[in-house]
Structures are given as C-alpha cells and as structure tokens.
Length: 529
Image (tube, rainbow, N blue to C red; front, side, top):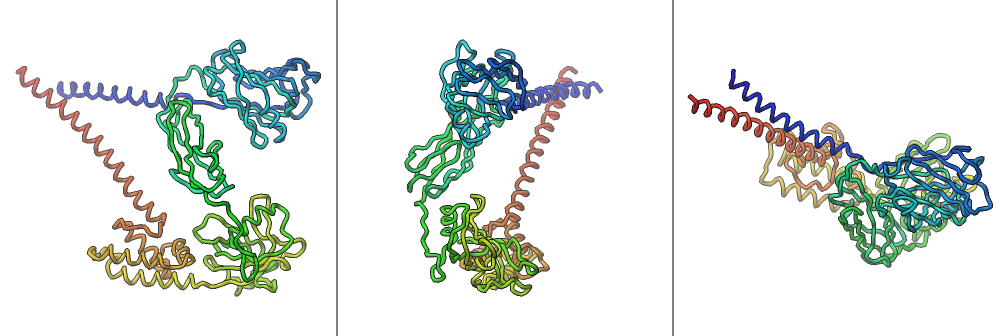
C-alpha cells in the first residue's frame, strides 16, 4: 500500500506541473489584444455649451471645441457637425490606462469624409507631449487615422479646415495593463497571382500568433508603375511583374507575393452574328457603358455555366450565366432571354435546350446593372423585342461525358472492382490513360463530369464519379478531376492518423513515467532491505 501511496504522490506532482503549464497556456489565450469602441452619435447627445461639448464613449472622452470659429457647436442635427476651425480631442477617461492605435470616422457622405481626412492632426502620450501627425485616408464615406506609430498614444486632436458631418467614431485601443504578445511571423494567401491592368486582386495577410498585440501590417510594391497596393488591395497598372510585400509593424516580419499584370484588356470582336462578342468583350462593354444600357443590341457567345431559371408558363423566358470557359472566373448574366431569334417563349420541350456546357449565342443590349453586374437587359418596353437566344450549339458535351464515363467504368473495372480485387501492377497505367482521355475532352464535357454526383446505381456518369472517388481515395491516385469528395476523404484519413499518433505518444510517455517511478521505488526499497 505504501508503494502505491508514493507513486500517487509522484503522479499528483506531475498533474500539478501539467496543470500549471495548462494555466499558462490559458493565460496566454486570454491576453487582451487591440479592441474597438464605437461611438455612434445621437441628436442632442453629450453635454456642454456652444463653445465646448463633451461626448462620453464609455472608455474615452471626446471633447469638441469651437476655438476661433464663428459657428457655435450644434447639437440639434442628425449628424455630429464639426465645423471649420472646430477641433475634436480624444483621451482615455483614466490617463495612461489605454493606448489609442487608430480612429475611424464615418461621415454622412464621401465629401465630408474627405474634409475629415484633411484635418490637422496631433498625437502623443498626452496633450503636452503631442506632436504633428499625418492625416487620414478617405475611402467612400469613411476616414481612417492610424496612430500605431505613436508610442503610448493617449491623446489625439483633429482640427478641421472644412466642415465634416460625422455619424460615428470608432476608437481602436490597447489596454495598457494587458501583457504584450509579440508578433512571430506573417503569411499571405497567395505566393503569386495574376491581375489584368486596371483590375484589382485582394491579398490577405495572416499574422501569428492570432492574439498578437500589434497585428498591423504595412503594404508596399517594388514597382508602382506595374502594380500598386493599398491595404492589401492590389491594382494592376501596366503589363509586367511586381513584388508586393506585407511587413508587420511589430518585429518587421515580411511576406511577399509576385504579381503578374496582364495587358490591359481590349474588346476583340465586333459583336455581330458573324463575329460575336466573347464574354470578356461583353463584360468590358458593360463596364464602359455603366448603368445605362447600350442603344444597340449585340451578339454574345459563351458556354452556359449556370441556369438560374427557365419559365415555361406566363413569361416563357430564362436567366442563365455564360463564360468563355466553364473553368473561368468571369461570368456574364443573360437576363430574361427567350427561346429563339423570333422571341418565342420557352416550352417544356425547348427548355431542355438550356443546359450547362452548351454553347449559347445571345442577342441583346448590354448594361452594368447596379454598377457591378454585367448582363443583357430587357430593354425599355418588352424583353422579347430586345433580348433572345439566337441559337444554341449542342457541343455533344453530355454525350462525350457519358461516353468517357462508360469507357472509364469498363476499363477500370477490369483492374479494380468495388469488392477490392485489384490488379495493382496495371492500376496506375490504366488510371493515367483515363486521365489523358479526360484532358482531351471539350470543357463542356469536363465540366459535366466534375459536377456530377456519385451513385453506384445511377447513370454511367454517376457510376463513374463513385468508382473514381473509391479508387482514387483507396490508392491515393492523381485526383485529375480535383473532386472535393476525394480530397476530403484523404484529409479525413490523414487527420485521423495524426490524432491517433498524438494520443499514442501521450499514452507511451505517461506509461513510461509510471513505469520509471515504480521501478525506482522497487530498487530503493530493495536496497534498504
């Protein structure tokens, strides 16, 4: 019994050590990082007179001063109006308790945001130690001021040269009493990316650890004649290559992305029946046209990538999206198109002609709806007179896909069946031969195969997906369809092994500890005797 008591004390000590380690980790997880406090103005809020007015945000005080302005501070409007020569000071209620890292001001319009961004700014530990600071950057109706470069910033002051009507003020701050968690690294969501000239692509930076006190990042381009970057949003300027770098304010860690800017896109086709617009042409025309539709109608050709609706009843029209390639990211909406060039309504039979993978030529006016959706338009009176499906080319996509699926099922069934009887010698060669067949298919057929569901009792295509997923997962073969189901299957296996290995290591270590304690006690006891 004494032996077990001593072993118990040793194990209890180990548990205490593990508990302390766990509490340290928990403490680290609970450390406070930068937080936000938003003050939203309400008519009449605050207190004071026409010369000085104070707004209480919770942890901060905002002091609004008239200074030498002829306009008194107003409290009867829906916005917090800071007139020319007025100033706004922000300080924590308890001096030194919080450090301001940023202030984001939302105005009632973009012009008032610009006025706010042009304010004269001073910042520092307190009013006595404040010095001149850079102004803010305005985007739409929001102005952002960054004070992360001011050590222990406890005072900021904005003095305006022109009136700004503000709606809310967001103060980002760090609790001065919280432990500082240093940055350890940074990564980007892309190592390399392409963007067309005049277009944008967004890079996202991830700072580690996630609870770092100062996770702010600066962005730069090594060639702004090729690409510029603001807050991770990269804009292509001219054809070429530029390196975009994200640098942490804390520690100076960096991550790079090589950006290739493609030539400025141009409309390559005439938009006629003989030379119809491509989808990229139609998108460019829409962007140049804006929200007022073109006065003329044009022919546009693309693969149907999504059928949104087909009405065979009252309206008899369809909405679908087309792309230059089914694997392309750019899409163009065909809005309320009719069945043929005579403007006939869709019937149950003709509705079968609208299928993903088919090549469609449409005819109609072009508009950039809501300034962000390139599409055809129904025109001013009757959609059937302006936009209709001119023709649909059945590219044999479905037939080609079914033929490939049947061949795959037969060929792969000879080397690997669902009962696990496999000719491993010839499996990889047979699989790679089917991959070559798949790559030779038109995109429409590839698209159909990639988006089919798995069903061992279904059509030849559905059976193909089931067999493909089963064989590919079991033998870790090249996932040339890039099916999520196969990727997920492998991931589950790998994650499971990783988890079990971790448990195994813990069990082994714990068992070794118990064994060592027991043996040590045994030999000591034997020596005493």
